[in-house]
Image 1: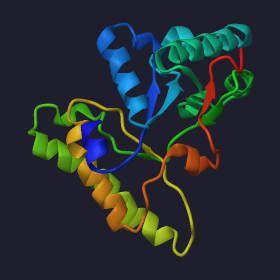
Image 2: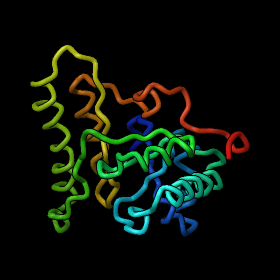
Image 3: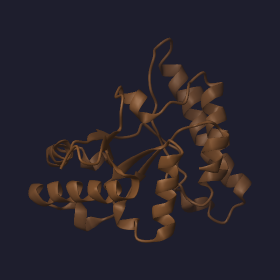
Image 4: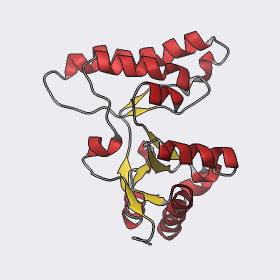
Length: 199
C-alpha cells in the first residue's frame, strides 16, 4: 500500500475471506479501504470445497462472504473476482443474486512464479516488470493501434510484489496508458453498497 500511495495509484484488493482470520489481515483490508482502494471478493481457485458447491450453497457462500467483508469495511463489496474456470452460469447467477459484478483480468504480471524464489529482489522485480512491459510495448501495441482499450492487471501480492509496483506503473504510463480504478474501467460509479441497503 505504501508503494501504491507513492505512485498515486488506487488498486482493487480481492479478498479471500477464508484468510481474514487474524488482526493483521483484517487491519490491512481496513487500511486499504480507508486509503481509497477498492475491496472486492475473491473466490479462490485453490479452495476445492468452494469449487464444487451446488447452486444453493454457492449462493450462501457469496452472501456469507460479502457479509464478512461488510463487517470489516462497513460496506458490501460489488466486485467479485473469478478465475477463468469460474465463468459459468452457476457462479454468475450466484454473483448476481449477491448484488455483485464479476470481473477478471487480461494481463498477469506472473509475480506468483516461484522459479525466482532464490533470486535477488532486483531480479524478481525485473522479471515481473518485464512481463508487463513486453505486453504493453510489443504484443499489445503491435496488434491494437489507435483504439481505446482497457487492460486489467492481475498481481498476486507475494513477498517481492511490492518491490515491482513502481516499475509496473512506470511501464504502463510510458506506454501511454492511464492507471484508473476498476469501477471506472467497467463503467460503474460505485463499487460498494452501504450496509443496511441489501440482504
